[in-house]
Length: 382
Image 1 (spheres, helix red, strand yellow):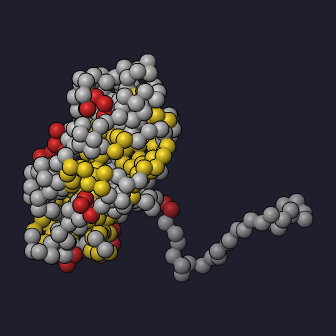
Image 2: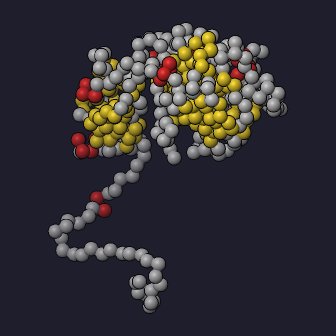
């Protein structure tokens, strides 16, 4: 299992990247949010990680009240509560979580929570824990229309009990379809404030990451030390809390990173709210040159693919990067242009010495077959 790693975007850059017209990316000032607090019973059953309904916690752009507290390494919690500017809003959403264990950033012999006393410190006390190599899975189902209709951003809070340990974090659909790139997060030493981890590699540290532009009604969150994502002598991928935060303002399509190889690439564009892509309007440039891709739309997803070899008779070089620029219109006649980058990994080529002879040349074909029978004589075939 391999997934492409991509850096996190700063707030201003994310607005440009997703084409969002409003700078109110998180929307707490006038929107809904769904917060789930893990390890509320930590440390070790003391319950110091429990938030009260009126406690406001989280990063400045998305701080909310009415957090949903969970306890234990595994479990299910139904009828989650949304927050709308401090007002609790009931919903039919549910969360199911499964981890190798739960632990605490304080009170269990490991002290790595420098937040001052208050709701933010409480939020960062308990967490779902992983060993090495293991994967924590959190599934949020029946995400309400207050979030899916306009789209939402996902904030993952990650602070373990010891600094310089880390893992990989990503989002999936229930069928395993990736909904994000993998972000690599490494815990800082005794932080007293929220620090965004860019997610590019384990050289950067932070205690939260943000994934932008989701609209799925069911979301699967993975936090893993498996697949080579773990970091540190004792690898960990802690998960303290999750927030789904409504995107307010004018919506825009969400451009996903292209993936491919030397022969071509594929990229996806997702409708978000009233930003519905008109597939016939999609145009693409590869390294500044106009190309003619294949564009198909199924449901809310527009898929753009381009076969470099079939169209141009060449391959993109191994270990190369390329600029992909996509321009499109939505059905309400708004125009969006997005600059993306395609990374081509290493691959091997077959030299001319392996060229197959022409079918018109004399000769014969030999096919070999293997069976489970024992040959009756030595040096014979069964």
